[in-house]
Image (cartoon, rainbow, N blue to C red; front, side):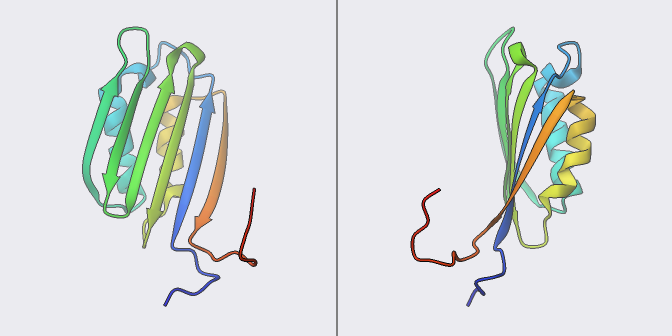
Length: 128
């Protein structure tokens, strides 16, 4: 049985702003390779991936499916913004994805939120 104080996984939310339009940020194939390499950095097992580009002048979205869950990105090139989501369980550590992702996107600003998933709440109902 799962202990109430032990997380089942870590869910990392990374937001980045101010990526210059000229960088490979806008090359979906290079972004896909970066996310796969980031998953490897995190000691995760890549199963498959799926990507979609929204057309010239627009961003892309992609997901890397992991045995330990997923790593995804959605971009808005007109704002130099990307939202990255890394949810991993087991021995995989999504925090190890951050350095490679930041090196690739070169953001002026970024924010990281880390949520421990699967920990039981102290009460039977929590509304946030």
